[in-house]
Length: 190
Image 1: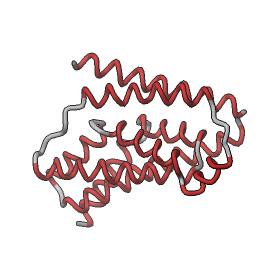
Image 2: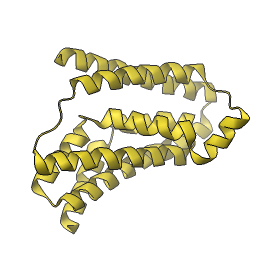
Image 3: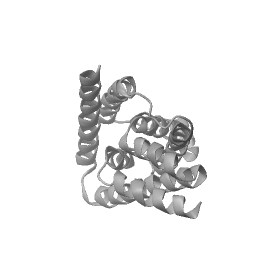
Image 4: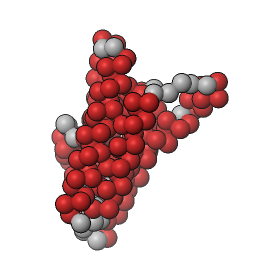
């Protein structure tokens, strides 16, 4: 099990470097508290990679991703518009933010949609066909969370030195680019 954990952690960490998930983590860090982003990523990754490992063990093939990519792309375009609009926190929003509330839900759902059919999901499916399922699940989840935590750290450093409006516009642009990219890919495959 240790070998499959180590191989999966390293493979997924490397696959995740420069991936859209890291850029999403960076963008979400500009919007939400870092712990909310990291927890959302962890929840989404744990679930998606459990599905991936299940597919790898039982089917040995990935889910078709055209429709998922289209829905994810549209969601990203919505996140871009939402980011541009900005938020004003009410007292109720501040109370919800203490436990994560909508931010945790948004980040978790966004990462789940983005990862379905993504290269890290397919890599996890492939690893699960050849390695221990539990080690693959834990390792792939750990590798992805570590890579995205790196992006969160970068987001925190950048956020301290860049004006808030520039970060807001940059995050909206990233969401729009990824949304357009996912919609374009999905429409090409349909």
